[in-house]
Image (cartoon, rainbow, N blue to C red; front, side):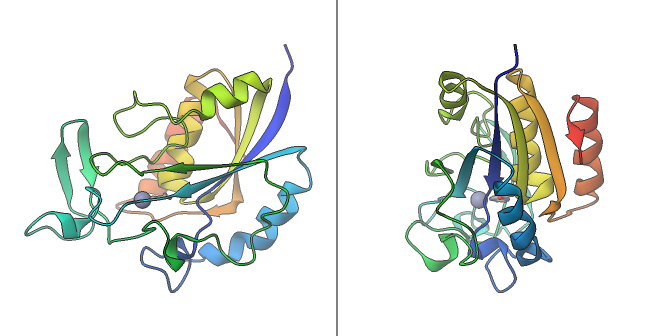
Amino acid sequence: MAGERALIVIDVQNDFCPGGALAVSGGDEILPAVNALMEDFAHVVLTQDWHPACHSSFASSHAGKSPFDVIDMPYGAQTLWPDHCIQGTKGAEFHPALNLTKPELIIRKGFRTAIDSYSAFFENDHKTPTGLGGYLKERSISDVTLCGLATDYCVAYSALDAAKLGLAVTVKLEASRGIDLGGSVATMIAGMKEAGITIA
Ligand code: VGL
Ligand code: ZN
């Protein structure tokens, strides 16, 4: 049952690019590749990390904690981050070079104070849906290619959830960059391969 193909571009926002609050090394280098990739797809979806100030994933919301510490949340382990992608700020805006004309849907995530959402499909409790799975299903999209920031967090978690939903999944590494905490890029790439995801 061959369906439609879509490109899902994850979190290509100022705060994940050099000079941003949670800068991914070389994050801005992917823009030419991301924009070129859009031309190969009839359908393009963007995601946008979109946190309220005082979001529970910010180290600043937890007394005595620092960015990159890991804490236990009711839904499991949560890495704490510098304040980033706060709703309505420059840092939360898409990188100025990103093609915003072609995309058909922008899905925001991480907007609930009490829970983070790395994945474009489910929040970090792995239960609360964002709606993207239903959107793709209603549009008969069964084959997705992912790229963006960061390879080892939002791209990887989105890809793994897409595979769980039964979609055919490809991740384009040349159009992605990772944060790489303690070897997380290699770990997540291995996990994605194990889940049957094509790493291109
Ligand atoms: C991301 C950490 C926190 C990402 C978002 O886009 O990979 N990582 N929020
Ligand atoms: Zn975030």
